[in-house]
Length: 417
Image: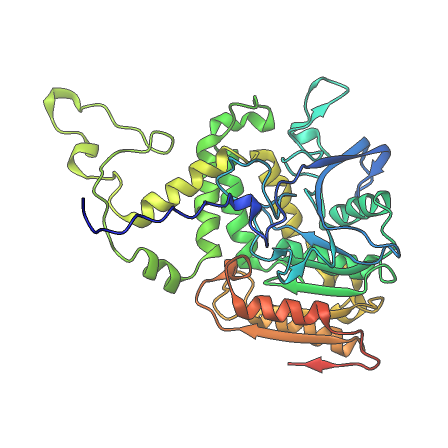
């Protein structure tokens, strides 16, 4: 016998989806609009489906709803877990839940996959009832305004009398702004982050390179491809290139630097070996090594590979074109005229290291709201995480959002910059 103390029983491991500040397991639902839906350009769909999730409870006065608007590659699943075996929760799970900045004990939170998407909502990969095949490029041309009008139909279906707040980052910020413009009496607060009032030339250029990578891939076949086929290489390259714009030089250098990898394995989806040259001479591939060498290369290939397993190439084309065409100045005559109908109190947040939609573009939105005589605030957070800062862990951002949602509606205009 020894005098060693008995080992204490290990503390039980609490499943992640049962954490007290988590919304837990959630089940997506489908809203089916049974009548024709007319897009901005006049094209119609005979019915429209939006996949969505909700968290929390709608109150008796039906005015505690918060609409979450997702970015380009996002979807309806922004919080909680669809299955106990999921590797990751919803994409904004760090923000939404009991006691979190968007507190589901107080708010009824709604998030829908936009039309044109590929996560259950009507989009190019949906089946065209007239042909029994995917719509492909026969799906109507898409705009941010179409996304807004479609989601308003969902909110009406859910019996929501008005939105306490509409929140979005990047493309979601564009959607949120248009909600406040198109449905001013319905939208009490607007929170737009890492966004812009008009897609600039550089952002359009990056989107076009991605689209060309897709359309030049033989697997694209003018938009007609099987669900398990298509332009996988082109879509992966488009994602790799776009992902770089979501980061910053500082964050990439800190995470990867010039570190090399041990494995020299090829990525078969993105590269192919050249055959040996005739006469036994070494091939170009043998003379110059273009296999994976740096950790950042491996990271980008991983991003490309995971993206093609969850996203549709035609949806990428449609949504990036909708982003390119977003221009409140042109659509309404000026930014001040665009915001003239707005009744919402607004908060716009920029991030110092965001070079896709830099701080000055976010600040311009807040200034235009002020010039239009609206209640508006601007906050600029110092970060080196790039455009994706709005998605990442940030106590400063959470406190900012919580404060904006909790503050009472002011009786007079209040602008802070």
